[in-house]
Length: 247
Image (cartoon, rainbow, N blue to C red; front, top):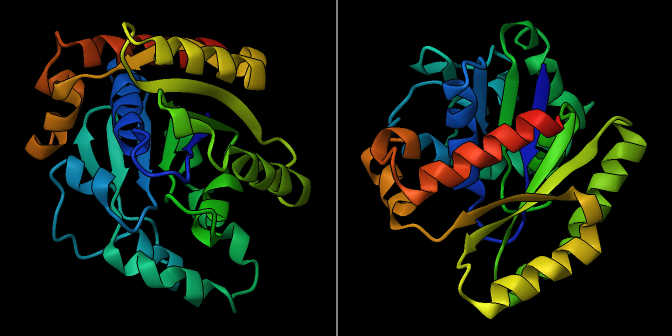
């Protein structure tokens, strides 16, 4: 069983799109997968058409109740998020062992799944730390844009701190390029820069700019259900196979 955190504190990098479609892609490979939405923006939850649920991850973090699990299909489940998570950062400050709340909630679930994929918030606060403490590895989506590197050192420092203090086995499993246009010279330049920075952590699979990736969540679907022959589906299928091979 592997637990993967999808992390980038910069908005617009394709983080939630990647979490959704990596989870759906693993399920297509018949890997029993649990997606966890710990982002107060709830985009992953709503992207699968889930709305107005009574119990969310917020209730589990606040009250210690079992994580609520919504079945998406035979191989894919999801723990929904809530806007109430916005207040969780402040609520967690006074809690004992506050960094390990999600880890403890996941203990009884780990035997049920091949993969757990956590969509982190676009902030490096207590919710993100809670996602990193139980994770085996971090995947970082980087947009093929000039500012892709902004704050990357801070993100790597947080991962390093979590490794030092809470989870010595945490690794950066891979970095992959999103919103990529192979015809643009800038894409090649960014790719080379990332390779210099991360070395063999740079995955060879790239996610091309594809309108279907933006449309799919508006229909409550992943890319494989919405547009199975699209470039987006092809790219995420390749990425998932690479992730399985690497991990």
